[in-house]
Length: 430
Image (cartoon, rainbow, N blue to C red; front, top):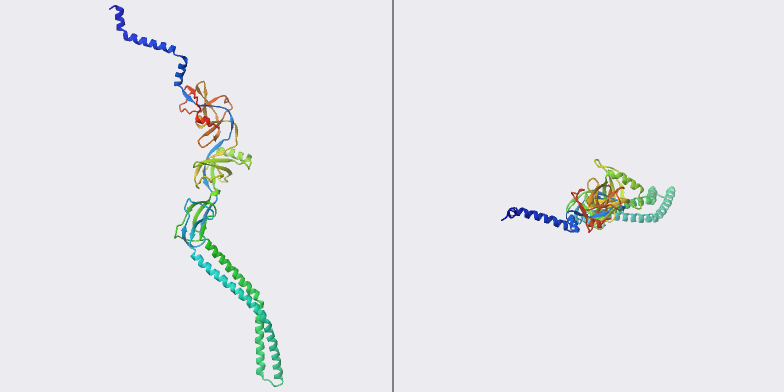
């Protein structure tokens, strides 16, 4: 074996490695350019982008409010009685005039019967008084005739006595009969004269008795506690068999049509809200909406509260609920609502995930992310799932492309490529 052959055999492994390396380098040089590009994409992140085109949008403020009502009726007992039946339950929805609770009516029924009898007695007394008046008028003429006859009889007795033909006793008897008849005549006259006074007195007593009957009838009707309006039972305070006194609370009910939402307006928005209130037409008030139990309810701004509680940072706003028939709203429940502000021009609506801390967004430029600081102008919502942040920047080019895919560790050094398929957020952009 020659010296070259011995050298090759000794370094065969090293030569094999060097040859393989040379071959690999040669192959890399002849790989087509499109393969290199595909390799580059394998090491870059795909992102969805949207154009930075300003539009008109309606901004919203997210608030939290509590459902309440100015019309909560506490139905109380108007009589002393025992609870006979309780038909209503807490949380139950009832219609106007629905029977909620029954009191034992026996005590007030006895009182009604007694007062009715007293009124009937007075009616009979009035009828008797009127009959007596008619009889007195007829009898008065007879009484007067009797007085005249007795006066003539007394004159005859006096003449006979003067002639010495009659006795003094008969004269006295005639005098006595005349006096008695005059007394009867005067009494009859007095009865007729005072008839109107007695009649008015009896009629006043009858009116009082009838009022007592009406009061008793009212007490009987108050044994049936009914709903004063369409509403929902808030609380039932009694049970069957309880003894209630006048004024005891029985049932609390809230008017379903008068529900309101009280929400605190943050101090940083308060000045803007007041300015808007001064310029917004009363026919088109500020509106809001909230999604409750998979139902959207519409609200209208009514007024600002006149008092701020201790420790409270903002002022409470009161909203009316325009459509609450599709969902049962519970008194005292806290809900999230969106207060709609007047439309704004030249703003861009971006998905929530496109905004990073410090009010920064990232623009897609030459396969890399470029940070850009913007001013947030509020939020808007297209439906229950998609919420958008409104941004504004006078220096943001309209041709810029905003990255809307969230990358937690995004930096300016990460290579990116645009996805060919748009994201769902981009497709739902307002």
